[in-house]
Image (tube, rainbow, N blue to C red; front, side, top):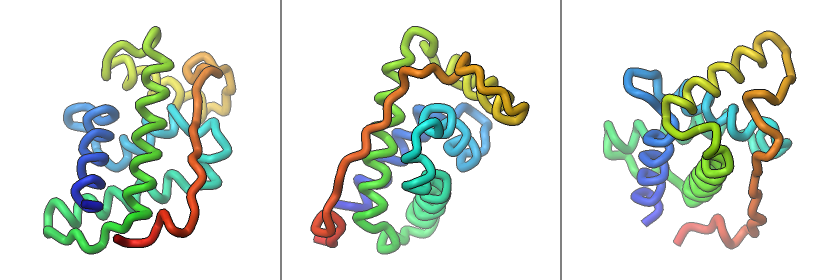
Length: 142
């Protein structure tokens, strides 16, 4: 079930990335940037735009029951997004042991970006981005 799988992915991402009282959409983007924006895939696959679109679709589903707007492509994007977030959190387990650590590190990284500092102190070079290859058949609705 595409829409149920999509919503479970969004719930998992929110649980991993968003702290209490934070603005969900902005935080999903900020924390995802911290873990993924070093990769050329971030721009190539329009992660920031797609995260915003998926969050809007999540809201439509949760608040209006509109599940028809969720496509197989949305599910595939959230599968890849969730995998890469979790993969990089595991890679950073020595410096990120809790959500509070993730919040601190991502805020420091955001400050570096604002100041145009590229120290790699807060975004270590051993992050990874897996980009699966898809064919048109993968996106066909069942």
